[in-house]
Structures are given as C-alpha cells and as structure tokens.
Length: 503
Image (cartoon, rainbow, N blue to C red):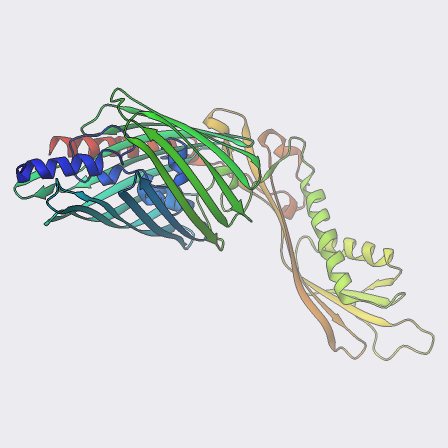
C-alpha cells in the first residue's frame, strides 16, 4: 500500500491537474484554477478585462463594478466521469458608487483506491467581494475567500483574498488587472503548500459584433501563460466563441470553444468545451440579470443606460431644446383633450430664462390645433351661447436647458469630445372657467449626444444662459487617471511577488 504522503500527492495531481486552465503546478488548492464560467472558458480564459456579474469574483472582482442590477450565475463543470464542480454567485450594485457579490464553489472526485475502498476528495470556497467605482469608468475591488479541502479523512482550511482593477478606456476598449489567491498555505498532515497566487493583466476590444481579448497570466509556480479569446454575435440572441491557452508548460495548453444564447438580454445560457491530453472539459452556465442601476461605463457614457449617439455636425443648443419642447408640449396637449376651437389662455407660474421659448412653442402648437390663443389670466364668467369654450393653461418650468456634462480626449491625445445633455421638465395645469383644475401632469424629456469639442463656441445663443453653458475641462481625466491606473497595477504586481517571496 502506498504511503499516506504519496497518496495525498497523487490525489492532488488527479483532482487538480485536469481542472486548471493552465499547466499543473505544485501549489495547493489547485481547484482555484478550475476556470469558472462557460463564457470566459469558451474564450480561453481571456477575461480579466471582461469580467462581470457573479463570475467576476473568480476572474477579477472589479468586474462587480459593472453590475447594473441583480445578477445570478450558476455554473457546472464536468471532467470525464468522476470530477464535477459547481459554482453559484450573486452580484448587485450598492447605490451609484459600489457593488457587492457573493459566490459559493464546491465539488470533488471519488474513485476506488486500489481495491481498498472508495477514496474521496472535496473542495469548497465561499467568497464575498466589494467593488468601488472610483470614477464612472474606473473600478477597484477586493474579495475574501474561505477555503476548505478534504483528502480522504484529512481536512484543511485556509483563506485568500483577491484585488482587481477595471478600466473602461472607451466604448470599445477595456483594461483589467487582478492579483488572485493571496493567502495562507494549505496544510495536510505536516506538509504545507502555498496557494496558486496569480497575477493577470489583459485588454479587450469590441468592433461592432466582434469582441477580442488578450490576457497575460502568471501563476506563482508556472511560466507565463497567454490567453486569447474572441466572441462573435451573428444574431442578437446567439454568440459564437473561441479561444486558445498558450505557454511553455504545454501539456494542458489547448484551444477552447463554445456557444451562448440569450433571451431579452436577461436570461443567458452558455456552453464551453476545452480539450486536453487527459480528456475534455465541459461547462454549462445559466445566468440572469434583473433591474437597472449605475454600472461601470466608458467615460463618454457615464451613468447612461445605453450608448450615446455621436454627432459630427451638431445642431445648435437652442434648436435641440426647441425639439424637446415640441415633443413634450405635444404629449401634454394630447393629454388635455381640449375641445376643438377652444379659447386658451396661457400663464406662467414662476420665472425661468427659457419661459419665452416654452410660451412660443405652446402658442404654435395650440394654433396648429385650431385654438384661439391668448396670454395672461382668463376672464371670469361662463362663455355666452355660441362662444367657444375657455380654458387656462398654466405651466411651471421645473428645469430646462443644456449642459456640457463631460469633456475629454479619446486616448488623452486625440480630438476633444463633449457629452451634451439637454433636458426639459415642465409641470402643466389645465383649469376651466370656475378655476377648477381639471388636468395636471409633469412631463420630462432628455437628449444626450457626443459632439466635437471644436464646435462648442458656435452652438450657444448669446444672451440665453440656458442655451449657452460653460465648459468645464475634465482636469485629472487627461493626466491623473492613467497614472492612478498605473499605480494600482504596480501595486498588484508588488503584492503578487511579495506573496511569492513569502512562500
């Protein structure tokens, strides 16, 4: 019968080696390298800049900062016939500057131990993480893991933590870095093995329906591994994926592939397959997302629920506001259901620099509908027989005007761009001749677009402050932000190598 130490070593190799996304090393708790998530693994594990939802707690906890609602992720990993791992995670934003996530992972294997009974191995991890949106396009996060493993009758516990960075450089380009599995050694009997401390850095680029990603990954006891991945959406509901894992330790270096389906951008079903010299790994994942919030987004689309249109030849600010008012007032008049040919009196509640424009659009729209329009208060008394119906429309401008929400340069050296926001929020009241309010509503409209910074001077209207906002330059966006990113990445590298030297 083999010695107990040899049996433990053999179990580590058999249970850990086929599961990791790179060649097998000599660290303990190799299940931490299983490679969770069908989408990430179908892309060869090139995911440090793409991590989101619950699986972000595996690849890069800063991906939690992308959470825009409640997200649930379930993953099943199957290796041959006797090794299975399961992963469940939940992520959700906390206000506008943070997000949290929790994840549970467990599994193991069992086999006949040379005819002397069944030998079992098992692993479990519980993870909790928090992400902080330092900037609308920059997230920093950390997570803590509780680890438990068993080999036959021997059990051990440990802990680890991860730190990650996510930087959304533009709509198309994202950058990520993470240091994973920093923590105490795994000890069986009297032997201790360090955790597989990992440093990964990567970038991704999206062009229309194609997404490509590249990661460089260094595990403490392995040579540098390169991960390549691609995702293509031929249809809105279907994703095709492929990837490769390349490195000097080539025993398990291989390609990967998979497919993904989604329903209404809320339900996602993904599958991944990856071969190796020991057989094929299958992963199935089901995830769902509900609700909305403020997730990590490009600087040009910060706090936006969707992409912002970029306009090369923008309209003037006052033209944009006028178009918003036309839509807003049309909706209000449709709701009032005024009798044709009525006599309408218009009055303003409060003061605002843009009142003249609101009144002008209101008069124009009422006239188009065949009403007789006057300004000021409505005379008392009921109209005589044969006279038109009389109504008073009172309005109060809650807010209205144009702002330049953000100014930046693409790649910090390119042409200046500006995010222009125009909004109108007006409260309306409709009264009859008895001064009774028979209809009231508050209606809002907003428009956002990206315009060339060189056109700003020609878009305003002198003397109209609501249509001629001041431009606030993006200060530290151009210089300090990349320096902060570089400093954080340097810190992650330092933590990784400090962990290695202490092992």
